[in-house]
Length: 112
Length: 116
Image 1 (cartoon, rainbow over the protein chains, first blue to last red):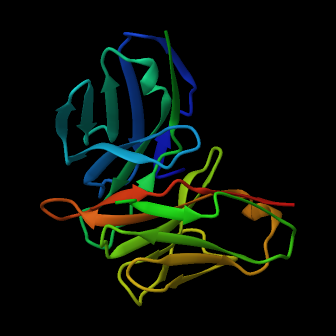
Image 2 (cartoon, rainbow over the protein chains, first blue to last red; image 1 turned 45 degrees about the horizontal axis):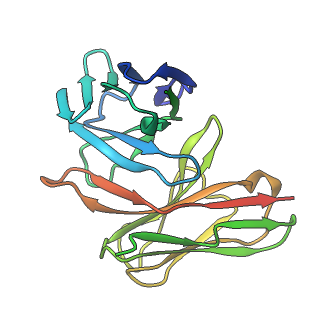
Image 3 (cartoon, rainbow over the protein chains, first blue to last red; image 1 turned 90 degrees about the vertical axis):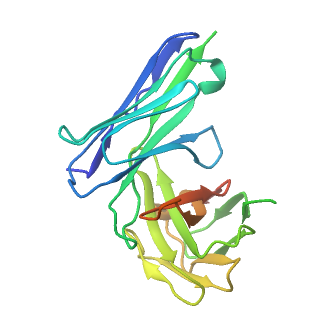
């Protein structure tokens, strides 16, 4: 079993829809939870991160962490065609030497 | 401020050939990483360097070597390329998050490598 599981998609939605992207994980030591966005043929870029449980909002994006269920989500409101990309979750423990563990990514397509 | 740069962008090799992938960052970061990205496998860490002069193995180091030439540059070498090394390679550098605990990683644009 992989430490981090992510549905590869593709997820295809109309413009304006609310999108929910999710990851599950097995390592209870994970404390930092990140979402990266990767456009086609580009490197990943950090969207947002949360520490431990709870929600974090940044514009149209909301990240949620449920540590009791080992489940994290990224919600995109009012989705735009420019949001079409692959979204990767990533997690790490709290020690300085802990490395990021990435999910495989979910490909999102937002059509006009 | 170019961030993380990688050369070359594309490369085709024959089995057994060698090559070096170059990476440089201008953000004064201590830590640098090499990943490979394959369909269905996500990003897997090959090697990393926590600081100038140190390197450590990641999840999939076999068949690769690295050199941390200075604080800015971190190269990845394939001594004898194999078809299993066909992949997209990303270099990254990182800085501590505000408040510590873990790093924010900044990625380069990637090198697409095909080994025939």
